[in-house]
Amino acid sequence: MSDDRINLLIYVDPSYCYINAAGFFIKYIPDKYQYMLFSQQCIYAEINDVIYEDIDSINQFADTRFDYVVIASDNPDDIFDNIEHNLKKHDYKVVTMLEAAQKVLSFGDYVNYLRINASTLIPKMLPSKVINERYRKYTNDMHIVMSFDSKFLLPAITTIYTLFLFNCNCHVHILYNDLKQNEMTVVERLTRLARGGTNKIEWHYVNNDLQDKIHFNLGRYSINILYKFLAYKILDESIERCLWLDSDLMIRGNVRDLYEVDMSDEYYFASALESSEYEDTALGKNREYTNIGVLLMNLKKIRSDDMIDKFWSLLFSPDFNYPTLEQDAMNIVFRYKIYLVKQEIWNSFPISDFSGVPEIEFDKIVDKTRIVHWLSAQKA
Image (cartoon, rainbow, N blue to C red; front, top):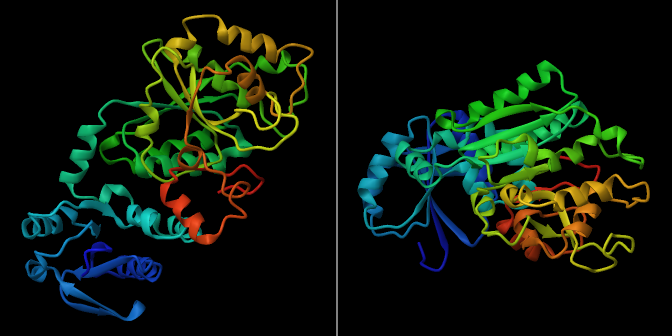
C-alpha cells in the first residue's frame, strides 16, 4: 500500500448483515483511499467479488501504515486486541463503518447509508478501550436545547438520532407545549443509542403565553421557534451555556468543538453567517447576518444584563414586522456581540448554498461538514 494515500484496515464479521453493509461501503470508496479487508477467517464474498484475509494473518502487515481501523463486529474488544497487538507502532484512528462512511462516502450516498444501515453499525460497537478513551475526554455534559411540536416530530427525531450517533454526554432539554405522551416516549427511546446511558433527555413544559404577545402572523413558523430564548430562564442557573439545535438538522460528527467555543465575557451567542442575498434582512443586503438554527448561547452573560429584555421588547413591539422573525430581532439587538463560526462546518445549507458548486468542490465541503441544515421544505 502506498504512503501517499489514506489507508484503511477494515475488519468485518462473517455475517450477512456486516458483509452486505461492507459491500455497500466498499463500492463507494474513492480512489484516494486504499483498503485491506479482514474477517474471522479467509473468506470470499460474492458482494463486490472481494476476498477477506484471515485476521490471524494480520501480523504480516505490521509494517503497513494504516490511517483508520474500521471495525464492524459483534465482538469488537477481541478483534481490537489482536489488531492492537500487531500494529503497536502505528498511530491510527479506530472508527465504526458508519463513522468511516462520514469521511469516505459522498454526501448523498452517506445519507442513504445512514438511513439503511445505521441500526446495526452504531458507535456502541466500538472496542471498550476506544469508547472509554473518548468518554474520558468528554466527561462534562453538553446541554443541548430543542423545541418542536407534533408536526415536526420526524425531522426532530432525525436530529436527535444523528446527534446521539456521534456524541456522548449529551443532556438534551426539550422545551415543549404540544406533544403527546406516545410521541415523547418514542423520542425517549433514542437514548438507548448511547453506550452506558451517557445521553439523556429532559422535558420542560412551556406555558404558551408568547402567542398572545406577538403582533405578527407566524405563517409557516411554529411558536416553538421562540422557545430557544427562554432557555436562560428554564435551565438551571448552574448551566452557563447551551447549544440550541433546530429540528431540521442532520449531525455528521462530534459537536464538542462547537460547544466549547471560547465566547469569554464578550459574546452572548455563537452562530454561523448566513450567506443570504435577501434585500429585506434586518441588517440590509450582504451584512453580517447570522442563521440561528444552530446557536451556542452564553447563558451566564445573557443573565447578567438587560440585553435579552431589549430583544423581547423589539419582538413584541407592534411595529415589528421582519420576514424571519426572531432571527432578525436577534441580529438587530445583538449585532457585534455574536461570535462567528464556520458555516460550512457548523450550519451547512446543501440545498440552497451549494446547488451550483462543482462535485469535486462539494465533496471537500462535505468532508468538513458536521451539521447539515435542511432549510427548504425537504427534510431529512
